[in-house]
Image (cartoon, rainbow, N blue to C red):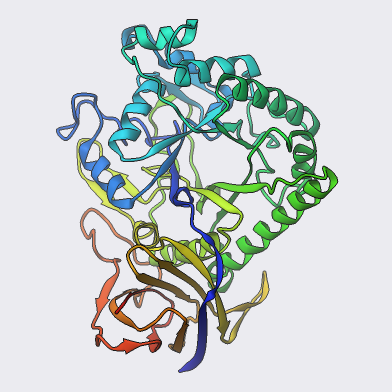
Length: 497
């Protein structure tokens, strides 16, 4: 058995956690919307056609903000197609996913749905085929109370009160050749700057997210980000980053995704801080990791011009869930700069929640580590001083064998500890030393593990891979010894006594 030690001191606080770091994403992609969150013919649909069984699963996931309507979809989308009487809404070709878009679900339906999901919206505007002026009209429609053409049009459509969306994304992955209306960094930066000006004029309270590079593998990264920031720095509040991981046959590489994500975040922070210095600015640019997940993109099969085709309906394994847990430790450990993050996506398309048409709801393996962290990693995040053996990975070199996350909620006087053990063959005896938090009592310990890393949940076996509770002794103190199973994700909760 390997040995490790983790020291957490209350004086070494990284940041208070912005609850929007546990966001997610609904795009008009595959069955995310239609037969996902919206299926009027379903037995569990409410009066607006929203599946109540899906809403319950979303609420149980504790998602505070949801990005909408894309994603790649937004760069060819005219939001005006999705308002007004449903019988008058046009069917369109969706260039992003080569599908038929019926526009039966639009911005007003989303506003209603997100409220029922106990969440709020992060709205992306079309800066591909769209214009800064059209983005301004959308903000006017959504956020201005009354007295203008578009705000009164919203009222005509049955929404007297504005939606008051707070966060707006200035396009999506505009450096991508796959993006409808993709742009160079210089051209995007100018378009984003002018859009930002209009959105702030329409509603000075909004928070704006500019597109960073869509991937660190892009040849322009991080020059794209630098160029965008140099042009837009005074006008925006966040720069975005996106990151997906896929199992490509090497388990050590895959489980070390948390390490790669941390390097990416630090590179973007350094780029933003360079521009801050260049601008002689006092503003610290925050980061929005508004797309992240495990995504088997190389295996996607897109069938052309169908309505709500099954796209990217990945069936996630125990190994995928471990990777998601590791990524969550990195995201929250960077809460001093990562203020928002969106698990992409929420339902059906590369999602933790899966629906059967006219059928039930399945929670994939990745649902559980996300739910645990979103529910219990609250308050402040604290530096974990970790002593453990490294793992050799072909892709990233030597990487710590453990990834940890330590949070403390002053209001509820609870300490939450999360740890990924990437050792495939070894248990680890971990000494957890908690300093300056007072006497703590262990409340619960849950472990996600199994003999088969490729095990999955299915409608026939929906709980094959779920966290299992371990017996806790109820001991009180400031130091605890925990045995971590090989290739496992563990959550432990303590309470001050």
